[in-house]
Image 1 (cartoon, rainbow, N blue to C red):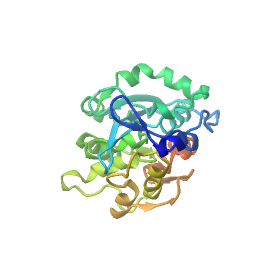
Image 2 (cartoon, rainbow, N blue to C red):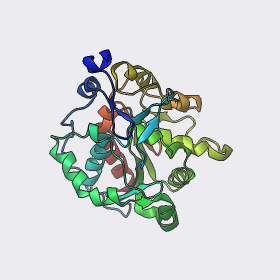
Image 3 (tube, helix red, strand yellow):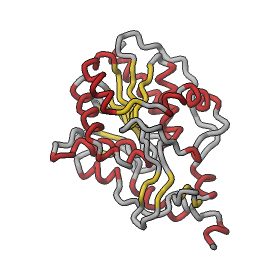
Image 4 (spheres, one colour):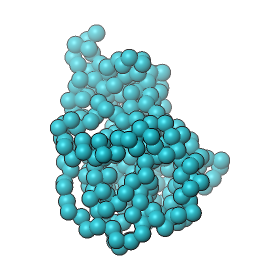
Length: 284
């Protein structure tokens, strides 16, 4: 009751999950982003497609058994997409089984017209995405059409995707076919899929920007998460040989070989700019 009075109690949703408290929303969610509407050079070559792998899952279980109402963070997904779109790239929207994309709508920047526009533009694709098995069957032989695979963050990227063999297949395909992989925040959790079935971790020795576990451990204190995480993304990746480029929730971005990463929602704009610069330098 005291937490509720202080505005630090997570909000109970109708399905029994919890979204962030009033204080957490005030601290961590903005109604307008720092997106820079830049006139990027346009992609000229054949590699003009970007596969975007979204989560279709909403509720992430905490150590205490409570569920966090999550999904894909709209800013982390849509700001990089805005920059890529402005550079002439086209998107193929996918989820693991073809169920609709789930967004953290409580984090949607309601007064950001750029974000609203691209969300509305792709809403039909968000509602009817390609399933990963169909993409694998139809597009693996057309790798020369793809510039990148983009995996947005949001805690939802930790539900199912790190254990998905089709995600692992796509990451290995991208690695082998000179297709870049772009991700940020909790999205790098997808890389853990490459260790399934006792396979060697694909990214040992890579430099990456990843959301720090230390921040996730603090957020239950003010009601962002309804409990502690069952495991941490950054420390797990570090244990597998990843070199972490950030220790804070900040704007850090990093490009190492074919992997482009960002530290947090705050890095979304910078990640989009770095992705465009890197892809155009490679493929134009």
